[in-house]
Structure formats: structure tokens, C-alpha cells
Image 1 (cartoon, rainbow, N blue to C red):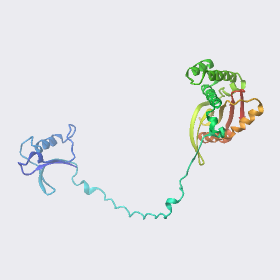
Image 2: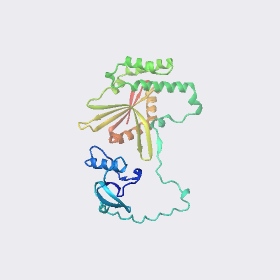
Image 3: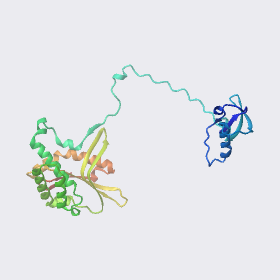
Image 4: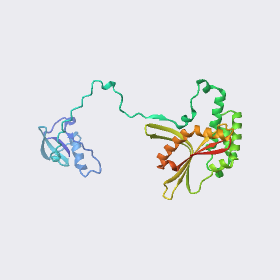
Length: 297
């Protein structure tokens, strides 16, 4: 409801000569002409006889020059029932502040940390350990750049990595040598080849997922996902790169067992993410130094 009024008695101070109730005058308003007339009279910019319907607002006699809407709209609005009396607050026991929290607490777990085991503080700063860690990280960086082995220029990839890698030159040289040696292995090339069918490839895929009471956060080195005609995943293979020094098949088997807990957690996470059964997720370890691939059953 919009209404423009001026006092019924003339000679009032123009600054107080009327009131505008919630109305904006615009060229599109069908009442624009009357509204503007009201505004000019109310502000003293226009002088003429005031004719209109006599109305009383808050005990004051006024002349209505402009009106739009229904003045009795408030009588047609349904009455809201008062809210029911709020329930009485439950009194807390006096020792409530000393009670243990009932909130579910998640334990943060990183799959890669499961394979690291315990280390002494001194070993963390030893040069040999640092160089070994830099070497392993650099090998990972090279392998993560490989999509499908027949779709990548290996020498171009190595050249780009050399320019960008911050590791020492002697480390770079050893990394490149092992990378080339590994790619000469038929097992390695097969593991990096594209399977038949509709396949998605994840490389360095970060994830966070809640499994039971654990918040699992980690990175898949490489995952190949085979999909059916409807686009739903049918199976998946996790491939994790390892740069351990391996001298025999027995050492390779022992090393693989050390990583079983880590890879099992990857399987649980990927099964949940892709809605696959555990048996549909293959776990594979690619050992770069001996150039071998080991499947975890």
C-alpha cells in the first residue's frame, strides 16, 4: 500500500508539509503523474488548491492526493499463532565438564607413513639418508610424467626434468641412468602400457577419505581404471613406484611385504571411491632398480 498525503490545512512549513510512504516515483509507474504532483505540493515546489479524499492518519486530518494498493491489507494477513512454550532445558550433571567427549574422533593415517617405519632423529639429517630420499623423490618425479609408454618421448621428458629438478647433478645422473635402465625392462614397459578397452589413468592423484575411524590422506602414484560401456568402473590397478636397492628375488619379496600395509590401505580407499570390491583392485609394486614388477595377492 502506497499513499501520498498533504495536510488538509494550507500554510504549513514545506519541509514538514507531507509524507511519502514507501514509494519511488519512476517513469514506468502508471500513477507517476499524480505521484509527482503530490511530491511537488508536499515539498512546496507547487502551489494549487488541494482537492482529494479526506483521510485521518494518526489523528491528523489529511488530503490523499495519491494512493496505490489496499489500505486494509493488514486485516487480510493470517494471524500467526504464538509459538508453543519451548521444552524445558535438560539439566546437565554437575560433572559434565569432566566427562570424556562423545564426539567421534578420526585418526589421521597416511599410507606412505606405514611403510617408512621408525627412524632415529640423527638419521633424518644424515647426508646418506638425505641423498637417498632425494634420489627416490626424483625417480618418482620422472615416472609420474610417463602417461602410456608408447605415447611419450622419453628423451624429451628427461631433458625437461633435468632443467627443472633442483637436485644435485650427481643425483640427476644416477636418476636418469636408473630411469633408462628400468624402461629397458619388458616388465616395466608392460606395466606402463595402455590396457585394452576404455581406460582412465590417474597419476599422482591426491585423496582424502574416511574409512571407519580413520581419516586416510595420501597420493596414488598411478592408477589405471577400466570402465564398462556404461562408464562404470569394472576394475582398477594401483601401481606404486619404489626405488629400493634390491639384490635378489628374496630381497624383492621381503621389500614387497614391507609395503603390503601401505598398498592394502590404497586398495580400501580406491574400492570405496570407485565402488569396487577389494578383489577388483589389483596392487602392484614397480621396483625401479631391478626393473621388476611385483603383484601383491
